[in-house]
Image 1 (cartoon, rainbow, N blue to C red):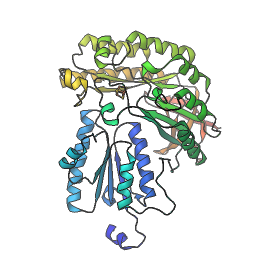
Image 2 (image 1 turned 120 degrees about the vertical axis):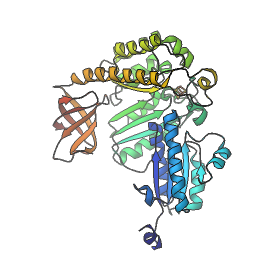
Image 3 (image 1 turned 180 degrees about the vertical axis):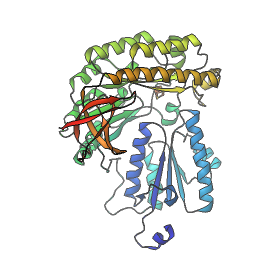
Image 4 (image 1 turned 60 degrees about the horizontal axis):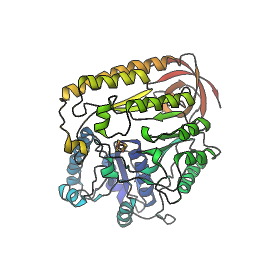
Length: 438
Ligand code: SF4
């Protein structure tokens, strides 16, 4: 079939993007897709039909790196049978030693560092077909979706002892405010209703720009875009959230009252070893301040279990904090040493995998109970849902507090803001009846 299509003069090469990792990777895959389409590539959802396969990778944990290596091995076999297949690899798997990567994976056509689109553009210029009216330009999304992720700052200056991100994505680099506002304006004109501003450390936005600005200013400017109905932001480093920012979130109607504030550990000694830059007391004070200015705020967090040397009682401190704060969502991961980080160099990964797994299960069980309790408070209440699609015959979307919500309707609700009366809940989702369209 592929050969037959190739004989036609209008044949356009097809690309397939494989993405794992954080929302930043997902947003960047979208940008890569936009660039490739500018060079005449068409998307395919079937890997076997692709002329170009892009791997957008993550190595933040060993399990993610293992998946990347497994996929590269699989593609090596495919390329052996289809030598014309092009393979491009980006994301945090790509470190500074590209020559070493090339020699280890000679069947990969291009490695480029995350966000370094100039490499991709030069490669695509040679291999694709530049469309007549297309010019390589800053990444401005061209596709339409109800919700969109917008990277606003790349990299991180914090060097938490366990984290590989600063080594792979480099130091913080903010995009100019006018560029972001222009991109959101354009997306909204095409139907986007909600944007999520992304950064490894989103509250650092703007400090590195020649015209200094900050996230509060950006949120205020975006709030002025008429048809945009919701703005989200993630991830916030707890040490960088100040009172001015909390007041800004409280005052801007379009900004969803939801913070993603990674705790990582509930024990001060472990936090110090992690290099997080705050104590538990400071973290709890921050939560208290946020809740006093923004009642009903939704909170999510990240936790690492089995950090080197973490004793049972130190892990229990983490459980106590989760019980005390009662986060809406907790993302938990077991520590795995990442080569090149301080933790890998200086601390011994001495918590047995079985203990890590037990701790991980305990956090998940505790959070399932807490999330169930939080969800049950929605029974009988009406929530506002921005509808993102349909799954299993039901429409779904999220509340302002980021609760996944399902409902049934015969009418086309895609992209609409609807009211849903909640009748049924689980720890992870709400269900109900639609009672109106805004
Ligand atoms: S703040 Fe810490 S955990 Fe987050 S990206 Fe930066 S170094 Fe990694």
